[in-house]
Image (tube, rainbow, N blue to C red; front, side, top):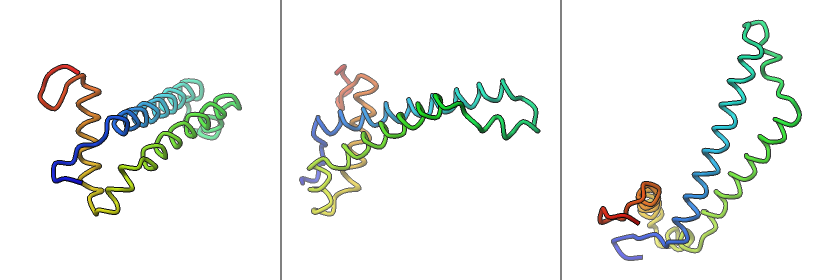
Length: 114
C-alpha cells in the first residue's frame, strides 16, 4: 500500500453502513431506556425498568445483529487483509475514518461537495 493510504470507495461505503447500524442500535437502546424510565420512574422499580417486553428485546437483538454484520463486512474487506499483511492497518483505519467522515458530511478531501 502506498504512503498515502486511500481506502477503496466500497470500503468507505461499508464503514458508513456500519456507523448507521451502530447509531440505529444506540438510538433504539437509549430511547427504549428513556421510555422505561418514564414508565417506571421510582428507584425501587429498577427491576421492572430493566425487564424489556419481548418485542423490544427482540428488536434490540435484531439491531445488535445488524451492527455486528456490518462491522464484520468492514473487517472482511480485502483492503483490511492487505493492510494487515503490510503492517499498515492503523494508517488504513485512520484514512477510512477520515474518508467516512467526509462522505457523511457531504464533502470530498479537497473540500468540495461529493
